[in-house]
Length: 104
Ligand code: FES
Image 1: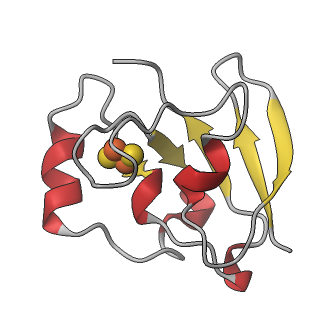
Image 2: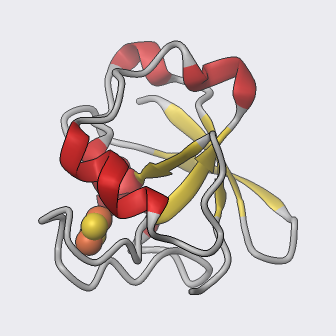
């Protein structure tokens, strides 16, 4: 099973097992230090906002336009911002490092 490296809002890194086929958000919302994911993955709330480690940015599919638009409205938006509900876990993402973004 792939393992995600998840940096919480206190800067602590955790290794988290992630089932292939789930969205990254579905793994993160189960964690005490994870994301709220209020809309359940409909790409409309942005409460699943994460920063993807620069080493991984080119290894996951580009965001679609609706994800991009939502991200760019956030006050904590950065170039490496992604909505974790839009990233599907594949075996190739073993070791993916994401940092949970601050609350808006
Ligand atoms: S869970 Fe709402 S946008 Fe990702």
